[in-house]
Length: 128
Image 1 (tube, rainbow, N blue to C red):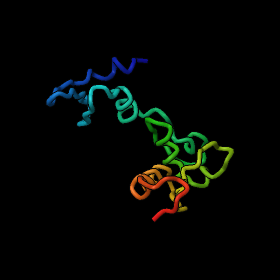
Image 2: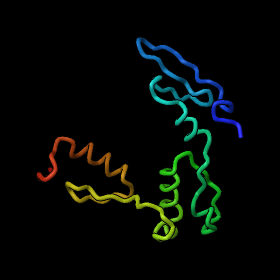
Image 3: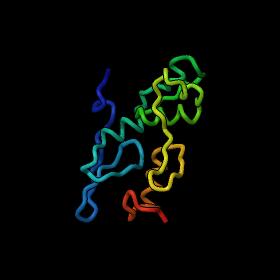
Image 4: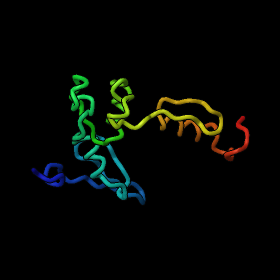
């Protein structure tokens, strides 16, 4: 099997002001040079993690993902009965804000809510 380095042409490096950027050779993504291009390429251009519901025959799904967390998110969104069965090992995606009790379907939404609404409030004090 060819290595990642062989299959993907090298990134293009450019300088903007005093910062150096690495541009993905396959898309328009541009990241600061200290950010690893390998992770971007694996997650965006080389999906290799198959939908667990499709693999186990619970659904007719042939989707593939670059990161396991994206596969889990997909399973919760599109194959909820499969995801709810603890035997399938799909981690829960829902979350509850520890300050105000608001419920979210995904932890990343809860984190965004916390940062936007409660950034300056310490835990244990009442939310506004």
